Length: 239
Image 1: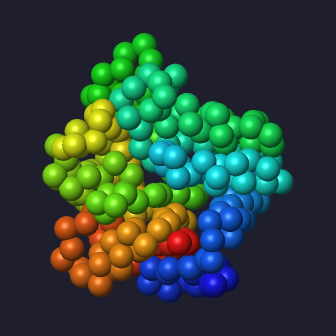
Image 2 (image 1 turned 90 degrees about the vertical axis):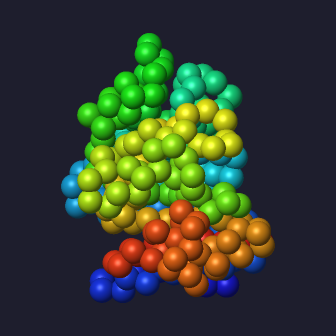
């Protein structure tokens, strides 16, 4: 098992940390996030955490919410969101409220991405960009198809999302197969994060990750993070 340590300055290579099981992976990742947030709180008096949705982050959220941080000075926001009401079962905001913003983390403030009064894609993207803040920690997942955030290959809007020079912080996308239109952090915004963490499990995702890491021309969206010069992506994997 790797013992995760923050990359040293000048060390741009993506790192893969392997753990014997999910509980060890979750504990290590929760500790890494807490240390980074605590550093930001000490340096600036506030911290911003951006998290992804789906079911995979639930154990991480439940571990993280008990961490002894000054959560009242932490802003939690979303890496991506489905264009559904914040009370919808598929809402990432609802997931975060249910599983992260409890116990000690109940004091944190949440910045959602969908306006329930006007749940239209371009309107919500515009508001998300108006309220976007620089992040201290971004936590990503990855699908079996190599997508991360809501950066799906072949999605409508993916060209803008992958523009490293001009894309706004948030973009609107319509995936080719996954349900619901999406609001997602762009590749440019992800690359700007000082602490970029990827949490994956299972042999299928490990093979996708290794395939993307070994091929700088890979069509997997995650490859754009792995091969960007200067990216210090840390990946936490367990079987």
